[in-house]
Structures are given as structure tokens and as C-alpha cells.
Length: 95
Image (cartoon, rainbow, N blue to C red):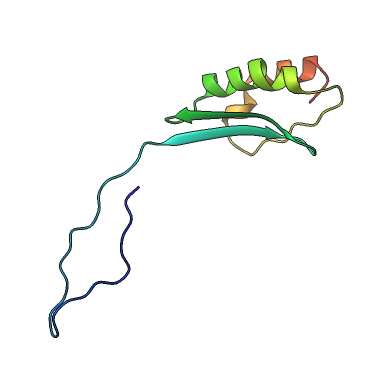
């Protein structure tokens, strides 16, 4: 992460010429599931999350941790609308 100073010093009547930082870090995706009492599962990935990765997280990681009558709330992203995710959640009565 590139950090920029907000202020610099220079001689009276002149301005400071410093290069802007262009160092950027890698993209990190964080997917998680939280219950009322605890953090159920968390997944950190280098890069962006695609539909296949999200489906695998739901089916292999989240569904086994959910209990009967649990509630799953997702944002309006297009990734969670996959049929496999809906089937997996409906199968255990979570939808």
C-alpha cells in the first residue's frame, strides 16, 4: 500500500515536487459467514472472486456449517443467483 504524506516542507516561495506513489498491492477478496454468536467461516483469496469460487464456498464450506432453520442473506450481486447455490441451500432447508 502506498502512503502519501499530507504535508511537505520547501523553501519560501517554492513548491515541493515529489513523485506520486504508484505502488499498488494485490487485490484480495474476503468472503465470510457470521451467525449471531460467532464467525462461521471465512475465506481470503488473492485476486477477485468469480461464480465458481463463490459456489464452491457456499456448497463445500458454508452449507455444512449451517444448522437446520438457518438464514442466509446475500447482497444483490449476480454471483449468488447460480442454480447450484439455490439447490444446495434449498436441499437443507436454508432458502
